[in-house]
Image 1 (cartoon, one colour):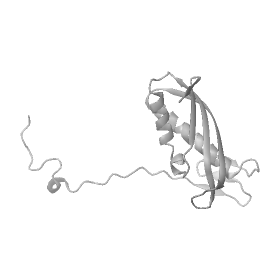
Image 2 (tube, helix red, strand yellow; image 1 turned 90 degrees about the horizontal axis):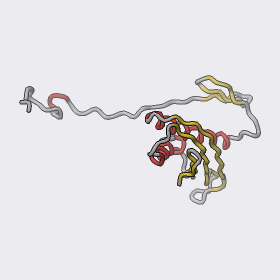
Image 3 (cartoon, helix red, strand yellow; image 1 turned 180 degrees about the horizontal axis):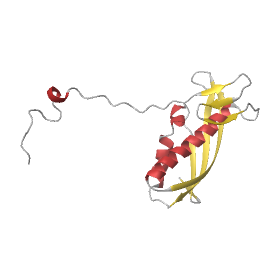
Image 4 (cartoon, one colour; image 1 turned 90 degrees about the vertical axis):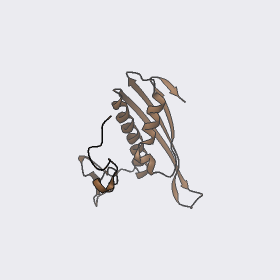
Length: 155
């Protein structure tokens, strides 16, 4: 056991000062919507032209599915697991009973994924994917997630 070599311990504010607050990471995103309706990202890529078939609601569903899969890919990668995937999403927009505003009141997502190598903690991995998608966290409706992993439905 070591003897004391300095007057204060690690939590001694007289020596170290008050603890610093922990700051959350901040992510910023920017898009431009031109007069002709073309949307572009601050990160480049192919601009999205206005099309009647792609409504803003469709883009929300696509963003939610992609965000969830990116979250899954991140957590799977930490475990050394590769992911291939396919997703579909559907939603219902109507007046919410709580405030009379039109909004998504129901969203369903179906994921068909393959994990290589297979992992024993599939449920935990899927829970993290759902939890850590910030688009899902930003919604007032809780999405209904349905997962098929390596050919088997996960309940």
